[in-house]
Length: 100
Image (tube, rainbow, N blue to C red; front, side, top):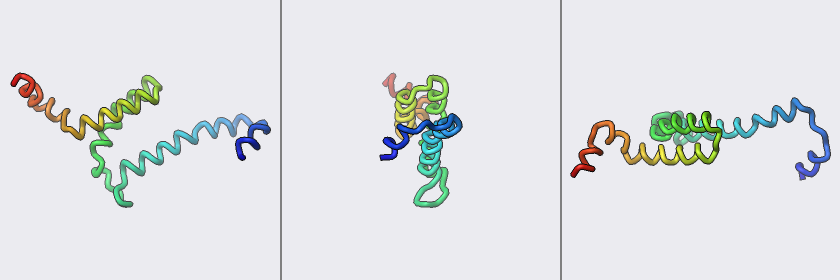
């Protein structure tokens, strides 16, 4: 119903510009809530893997402006952090396992 009403009205440019920020704001609010809060309490370290995965995900989103790329990099990053894969590589254990 609102889309039918709004499609017939010429909206001002400032309002259209303002509306362009709504998806980014909603996404930021959802991410902040899911990453920094646990059971309604501020607990940023409860989701440490997800917080670490933000870094490569944000870089891909910023550099390539690709939602699909950012989602894929985010999912892969969280998976690798949760598998302790990067920790194994940094300690050299992964290479030893490949040689064995």
